Length: 253
Image (cartoon, rainbow, N blue to C red):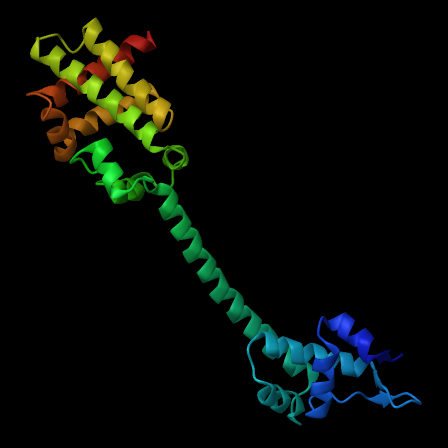
């Protein structure tokens, strides 16, 4: 069976002019002609065209493609092995590129989507991403972390302003409670500890009481968190830890 130049062009997704050019330079000379002198391509021609298009897709110039295909010591199996090796290498390279793009996309999603001016407007001199790298290292593989990033990626400037306003309001009330000498296991303190847990669950990820207790311990054990909470008032970090423990115990009853 043989095929016309138009049919082959349609099969291969190339133009008739391309096939004419390949014939003119001796890269793909059709194996037959009809009575009118028109080109006719056989199965072997189609196989060779497939090889040509493969190497062209990989960026080989036509003269190198011709050298590869006309090498007398090269059999079809050698071409297949070579193509397999080249494709495998290309796949590995493309996978690395895809991974890099995916990483960049995740980095964008994890960022707080605000301009520098908007960040200052919302957070003042606090850096909302100060501990992002450490948080990713600690919890990056957890569902809670992934959920946090999914939610944060959707927040607008107005959302961040509402979130920060809640934080500021809670901080002022808790600092006042500690300054007034309210006990950490009292109703007011445990109610505010519950509010603290609910805030995180509402804005970022679901926080169980067990997880909240771990957070409370971290607020004292980690000097940076301790400094943050103690900046609200002397002894706030330890008071909050105790209130979180008391709240968890109360809710478990």
